[in-house]
Length: 323
Image (cartoon, rainbow, N blue to C red; front, side, top):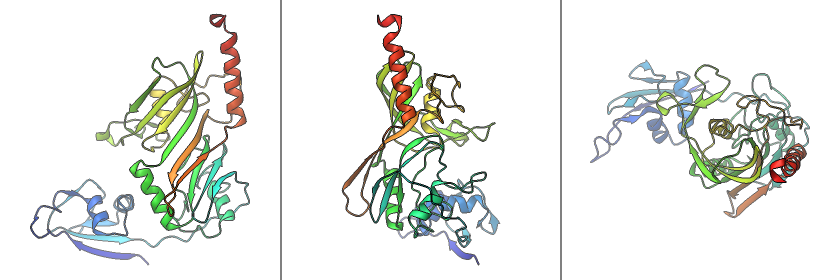
């Protein structure tokens, strides 16, 4: 059975316009403490919110004092995922969280085409109490990495830890550093890319630089050169936001696609067989959700990534321009 909530937008004493002209999703998240803004947006998209008797699917609708809202909250579906004994490379673990070094090729959570063999399936075998923490299909998952990106990913073991860790990502107090090998050589040593990212307007499987007025969301990536390797560069990226494919899209937009990226790159062979793009979530720093102490995890660089860098070093050192 679903639960139903009725609200009427009212003004506050002394501030008659305080709740007026507020976006519907924001109003719901403030009026209903148990509903996050992202949850409110999903309810709106699913047609679960009516304004003055009419179903509303626009989260940007502004509510007015006197508006009547009806919200239907479907009951959570039972977790229908199987625990699978998949080995995990654990970098840190306690009663509240764990940090895993995800290999290339491992999907984080189930999706059409990947119902099993995911990190979530492995986590359910490792921690038998994750069900429901952070969502039915993504228990414990705080953030994600692309299937073909390796490296550090944090998983919450409790609701408190999940909320605290997500708040850190939102407040930008958690730091995520990546290493990548890109095609080309930036002229500068460091910089920042501040371009909104959204679903590609034609190819819906891809992301692209999309203006915010067309649905793009602000995305900020900081970068610096770690090592110049001729026509390639070892880069360090730091995420300020966490949009899908953010580093890959921003790097390609700069004109320097990531080596091995078959979606946003040129697909050129570099002499090393890569299972995915040369992008690795190398360092993760966060505040422990209970003790408040800093937790820093370094994910060892995959062998194929190291082999690629060594090959490019040898090529660069032996090139005619270096002799």
